[in-house]
Length: 337
Length: 153
Image 1 (tube, rainbow over the protein chains, first blue to last red):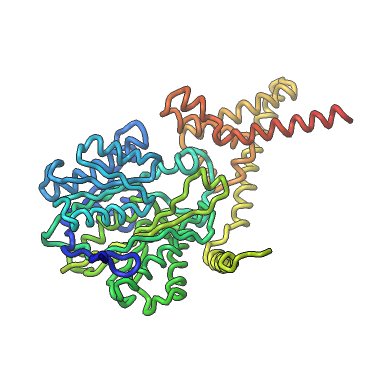
Image 2: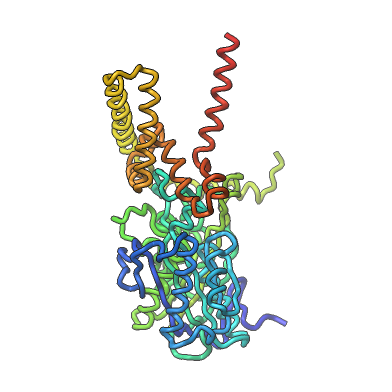
């Protein structure tokens, strides 16, 4: 029997589109100074959040964001049935330790910087499948915990490449519920891994651009939508280099008329903030979604949003071994009804 | 030789994409970087020279003064790393702060500071040379080779 909710090659549609009923975003000091600083729920003054290590700080960041999203909806922690989260650290350290404290049934997800979309898709499937009524999807990244794992010690004097991106310190969480009012997840496209042979860990926008374009193309193709159907197609963290490449790839892939397109990695920081090609990390797309974007949807300034979180699935080990960077992008269609 | 067709296509696609990437990616600002490296690196070396000269003036012999100068420069780099200033300077100066002995001190102190959180044995002890390690290893290798050459000549 054919899968009744599947469309085309990679896309799923929901019979009872799950509703985004509450969301929260917490960002670090640098992100708070960015152009969208006022749109986030909490702007931290301290990158360590009073903790002793970056890892503890990131875990607390995620935990606080989840608690905030729940409390905004008037929920207690145990009102949600499943907690879906992931982050950039080895063994999903931040998410696991946050889940230890939160004590909600937990599924850890790794999609690098695509985790926000991945957790939303899995959450929406759980709801539409009738397995739960309320789930929370979240993710986090922390500039300094990522730096020490992927690059150099914090105080190491290095000159960053002009194509490098700045890992965002921030966390976003979304409460998904069945059949309530609010923006809904209508459909989603699960991305394939695309690897066009890029191996420069300092130019991840270039590595991820082909997959972003591929997932966006497949989404429109599978659902038979015009490329300008959405009010906004937003990618997660391609940065200025990746976004410029995606615009060229839209042409090549036949996405005409061009989608109204932007990228969270470009939006989150100001050019003056010396981040080079823009923001990156799970937190980048998560805080932009849970901060300005969903607020705009709530106010009706945006009605149809295609949220395409992009992830570079590289590890420092495989990079040193000469491997190229496999990349992924998942698309989540969020619409007001 | 007998490359399957899809492999050839893949390579052509990669080449095409590579050229798109290099067109769009901003070019490194070599001239600016060179100038900054020259000026800051030069200032660090000048500081070293001033220290050396004043040590010699105060009566130290050249060899002892040279060692003492290195010690002082390493101390200063470690101090500025600890104060969180060295990496700010290095952002501009690049090679100008990496090549002098101060860059080596920075690499070791930065690693020590970063990994102290995993304790003194598995953190500081095990990972203090994470960044500086290659310099040491290949420094040793080169010195052995030079020693051999000197021995043979």
